[in-house]
Length: 272
Image (cartoon, rainbow, N blue to C red; front, side, top):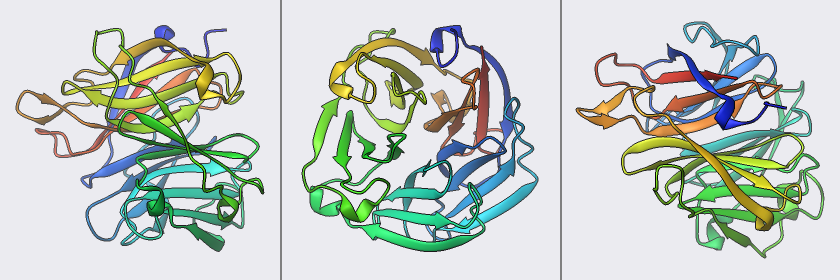
């Protein structure tokens, strides 16, 4: 099985994705989403996605205002019935119930959890498939919180488990500066985007016990290099986040800032 395996990937293509700063990339079977963070008027933007190629980012299909929330990470839960947003401003962690799965244009209710009392705010977020755990990345760490009621962030435990991912990658760099997190659907692998020594990368860890990061083993890292272009002269683009297509045969990564010469954010595709 070569799915969800960084070492099987080769660079495929790249697309322009607009001129606003981006903090997250997320995919569903029919749409790809990017989250903007221009300082005010932040939005989650949806584009048509065929699950096997880069979207046309000039054709917007839906949007959701996140104005003033300073968002940093997004994920879906419960087969797309819930959208989760981790940010650096109040309410810090939010769940939006969606009337139709993965449809961000129809929100029926919202709940929040102020996680700033834990002493940190998230850069990326993911949920265990059954909704019993929340994983949030910051710095070189993954913060893990349990939910006594699945998918309900108001039932979050005040006890936080912290797992460091600060191990040596394939280039001899210590993993740090995490910006995104995604799991293989069965929980046996976890992937994080990060930037170290001015190089954007993705790392893969295997988990001998599904969803249990204490059982992690580093597998490999993917050096994105110049595939997302340059932030400034001689400086590679910062990486905003990552996600896989539904069968793990394609990986997508997005830059944070607009590319130096093109003037647009870049989204790159890697293909197994």
